[in-house]
Structure formats: C-alpha cells, structure tokens
Image 1 (cartoon, rainbow, N blue to C red):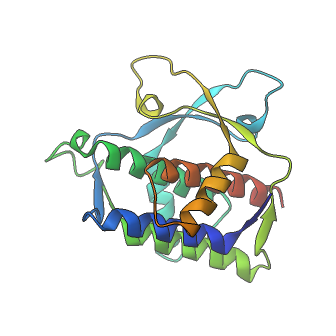
Image 2: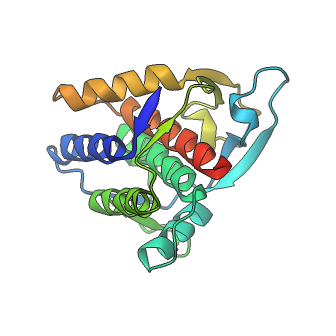
Length: 202
C-alpha cells in the first residue's frame, strides 16, 4: 500500500470541511489528557501480547505547538497529530463532555484550520527532504483501544484490532465522495501513526 503524503492533507481537508458545515470550527478539550495506547512497534506486532502505555494529549499538543512556532518537525509529530485527531472525533460525537469553565492550565482549543496547517507543515518538511510517498506493505493490522475506552482510566481497557488497509481505503472513499463520518478521523489518526513509524525507520 502506498501512501502519498499530499493525500493525507486532502483527506484531512475533506473531513474538516465536512464538519465545518454544521458550524464545528473550534473544539475545546478541558476534561481529558491521558489516553491508552500501544506503543510502536508493538502496535502492529501480533506474535506477542501488546503492553498498554499511557499517552498525554497535553504533551502531544505542546509538541505540535512547537512545530507551529518554528521548531523542525519530526516523524513523531505525525503520531502526535494522529492522537489529537482521534480526540477531535470523540469531541464531535459527544461535545457535552467538555465542562464550561474548566481549568485553563489543561485547556486546549483545537481550531480545525490549525490541524490542517500542522499537517501541511509536516508534509512539506518531508517533501522537501525528498519523501513524497511511503510504502506501507509490511503493516496492516494494528492494536487499538477504541473510544470511549481509550480515555477511561477507571478500568483496564480492552484491545481491538484495526486495519490500515481498510482505513486507507475508507479515506480514499472520503476523497471521492462528499460524505465523511467521525470514524474517518480515527482512521486518519491510525494512518498518521503508520506514517510516523515508517518515517522514524528511515
């Protein structure tokens, strides 16, 4: 499977445009930080049981803000952006979970256009380095904790299996048709993670 980096930007553009129609432009996250994740390279390995780790949305967002402020992007920034995009999917599905007047220290206002700018900056950085497309032939199935469990720390989450090939095929559908779902944000998050891992190996 070949992933053209510019197609990632087009897919996110289509998703953002779709959700701006009903007026979703800024999403406020002030009630979540930690999330369950299976780290690379274990997230695509099935010869042993994966170990769950904890990620931090606030740390991911802070790292992406450094890119916006001029720091050189890294492969990890694709994974960070993928995590933020997964949160966007959760918040679109359930906007009432954000509490008004939440702590400013833990508050993130995610502007949909900011997501596009970040992805465009990451893609441009790697295109300037000669990377226009990536072959992801050795990766398909991956471990994932699905929403809403992925941010629930009251109990041990269950792991599900996703498919990068299916995710990419569905994102191609989004590019061809004018229909998108919140699940497509999760699909794009998984593909961005695969891109991060592949770029990290180069």
